[in-house]
Image (cartoon, rainbow over all chains, first blue to last red):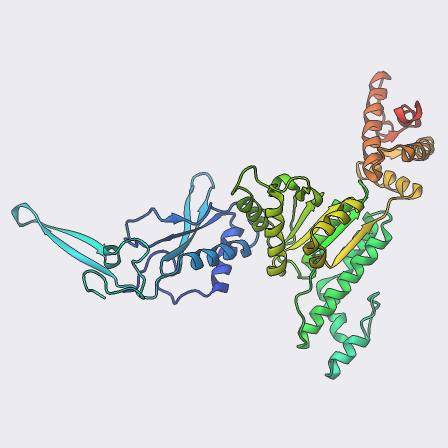
Length: 150
Length: 306
């Protein structure tokens, strides 16, 4: 199941030059661009790992692209995203965030139903990848996932 | 060089960039308006003939490289890293700033800003601090020009554990692999840059252009003084001009003489004295008086007493 998080996620994958063009736009708006990665893709997981500090005072996308490439190389088979933080007073938030890498295989999410008092049903969403230890979650070369879902 | 178009280009691109018959180059020149920044350079900077000549050559070379690209000849991205050597106050930083805008207009760097750094901005305080620091500076300079003033301080031969070497290695790597992303300009005194290159041969081979900034002669220094006063809407009275000539003659003999920078400082001090003089003389000061620097403002300098 293709994860659709962040801007452009319903489009085909962006090429590197398209990513660079988006970063150029962010820099023109004077947003601080950062690179983050994770292998825990739950939609409510806001705490991704930072790939270095957010980059302030940049003028050109080349520096960001070098970091994106370095992050992809160091963390293959994880999700990598580029975020752009607007520090303007009143905004002070991430204005744009989009995926720039996803694992080769995305097994998707499992829905658990928990029966509570009075036949209440509570729902829980968890990614299949999460059943494996960090670092092996989306590693296709490894054996089958413990729950045999792959 | 075997297609007819290439032959035309090669024969019609003299280094002085005179107007040629080739439509390609002419159109290109008009399109990127190369003459404007070079004319500006000629007008605003006094002297520096060899430097200007070299910049013209580089500009012509980049133009031809672009023309070659348009007719489909292979052109490796040219290496444009430079070393500016010369005594203090000979205009290295000023030219570096101009260089950024010239390279930008030629389409060689994408943004045309100048990031000026020294050792402190590149080298860290403890293990593991240098690499991120240097990389951050390099990232900021991408798309423009990185100007490293007094570059030889990066290398401390007396201390093997110095972190400068780490910064040098990262710099060299980026200078080689990301040539199209940034231009590095090293600056410093001639002998020390030479020695720096001897101990870091990697730098010498990666720097294509070594530009030497000559000292200014007395006439050029006077011209600089006049340009500087005019820029700040002052002017030298005829007597003050003579005093300035004397001043330059004496100041040049001193060991602390720093070319144009000394002249600028002298003028700053003369402006202070002029202000004192005007305040001391009671009454109204005319627009004329507010503008004029008199001989006594300059002759009060310490240079004349020793």
